[in-house]
Length: 254
Image (cartoon, rainbow, N blue to C red; front, side):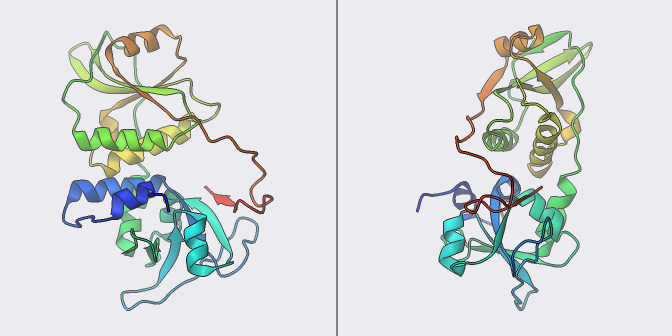
């Protein structure tokens, strides 16, 4: 089976390596997961199947439908992001068995999801009008850059390109991240996802300005001339049915 981003994040993960652990949790929050259920979803409500362990109950989720089928056969399930799963589990004392039976198999305790849910509240300030645009320089930690690139790679179809630079406002210089040609109504989702990724990576989201611009806007051209451009992937082409109406696609919870 093809190696997945969660495989790369969790296989061989040293739990004492905080940078690697944060990167794995960021990947988990952004991932699409398939949650094993006790019955068919009822509208927007789902009933996850609980497994009692000595350390406490867990639900099971997999990062591919094939892995879920290998474990549970023909079973009911729901598709949701790791972020949505964290919101579902936070404060309930329930952990997660992730990719059981696969190389990246791991069991995460309830504290992981309490912490992930807390990171989702981070916000990023909107960029003002800078006096000067500067290259990003070396003031942004590698872990933060990796978190941004990973989260942007998961945002296929929500924007065309991102640009990271520094903006000078009078005497203050701040990092700035611009998303170019965002999809209609995608700005709040992008801001939340990027703010979360920064918080999980250990950066304060309020310390990086965020801008949404058309790629032909003069400010975008200034950013592109000085900053680091990151192309976002194209979304996969497929026919999309309403959630729950396509037998090959589970309902997605947000």
